[in-house]
Image 1: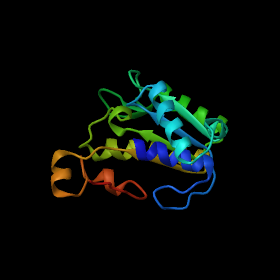
Image 2 (image 1 turned 90 degrees about the vertical axis):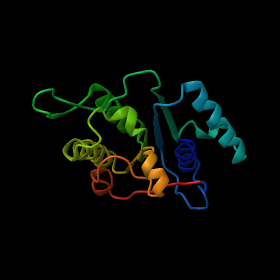
Image 3 (image 1 turned 180 degrees about the horizontal axis):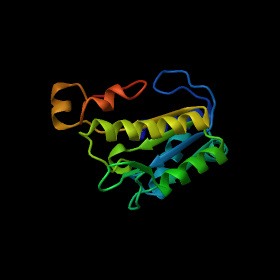
Image 4 (image 1 turned 120 degrees about the vertical axis):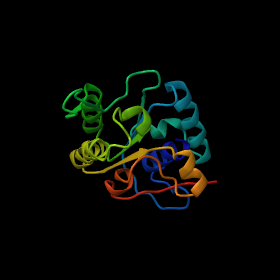
Length: 176
């Protein structure tokens, strides 16, 4: 979560992120684990790190704090298991387009995916929904997902079925 918020700040300021060059772009952080005040406290610390006033982030960073709210982006019809985008997804897409976001961070899959993480079809439907968002903004959508205990123990970072790895364009695993 902190690394992804740092990426958003880096993009908004056009500054390096963990040693990688980041071009300036608008970033939307859809966070489900921290409240608005906590997100801004962290953002203020990041602005200080870059020796920039917090106001410099205003035009390039949008924060959506969803902690304690229904943040599901997709649901599945009870009997047919047909995927349905939710009103939360439609609001996120509208917000990203209105803001002009070129990068959207969805933090985390656990809070935004309401299906069975072991059902490949449901996982693929969720990833496809976020891919449509990436196409709509002509940018990038990054989803955070915590690894399972076995994924941590094995050092693979995996969790759930193979669709979590095979349905996405790229995967990055940070370990201690």
